[in-house]
Length: 125
Image 1: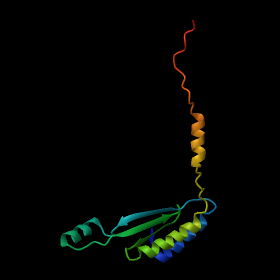
Image 2: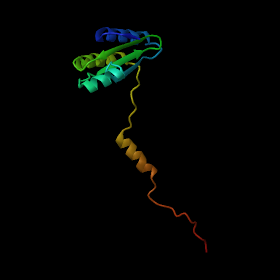
Image 3: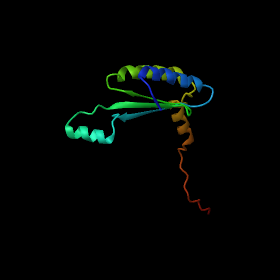
Image 4: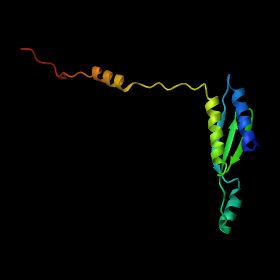
């Protein structure tokens, strides 16, 4: 897996989206990470040092894997660039079909029968 800086990561992610426009998918995962091994984190905790946690972002199209680490300082800038990228490239999503509240309420009232029929048949005399 190739670890890139944030700007090359975003440009390569754009290329992945372009390659998969006709068919294919791109999977993006985000993970809370410190970029240190468990042993190193335990040593830092016992020494009283603060551990800087970052966000590990991975992307794959099934053939190529890329990743980047985003710290707290660069988080806002990266998130804005990533949002613009997603809005531009996610054009194949279908719009959600919403029901009109008035139409749904009217159809429910029509299906209800105001007169209740008794379960037992009447005996004829």
